Amino acid sequence: MTLLNSIHQDLHALRNKEKAKLLSGFFKTGSGQYGEGDIFLGLTMPQIRIIATKYFDKVSLSEAQELVKSEFHECRMCALVMLVYKYEKYTSERKTIFDFFLNNTKYINPSLTVN
Image 1: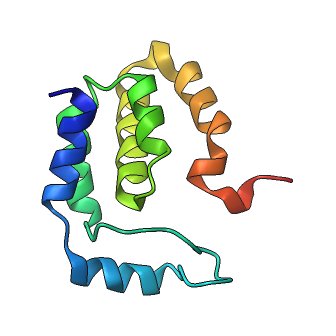
Image 2 (image 1 turned 180 degrees about the horizontal axis):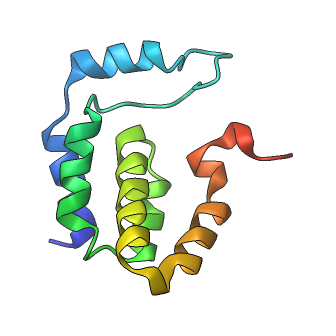
Image 3 (image 1 turned 120 degrees about the horizontal axis):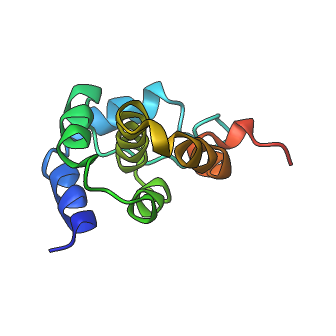
């Protein structure tokens, strides 16, 4: 099993349909709303942080890129949390990680990108 598959498996194992429905309402994912189209697994931030802590030392930027492109909010969030942890721990990689964030704003917060 690849690392990316392991991360996906850990995230999906904690899926909570009721929580996902609540999050969809909270983040305004309906038609015409600011979070339109965002899909939730229903994980909490503490759950995401546990998974991010487990994998951040091993995940590559290309693997993080795949997670950032995920249709699921929690997969994208997990990738970003892992990169924050990498940024804090590996000072020599900070510029690369910073550039990664800038180059992926369309996946991170599309409302911040300028057309």
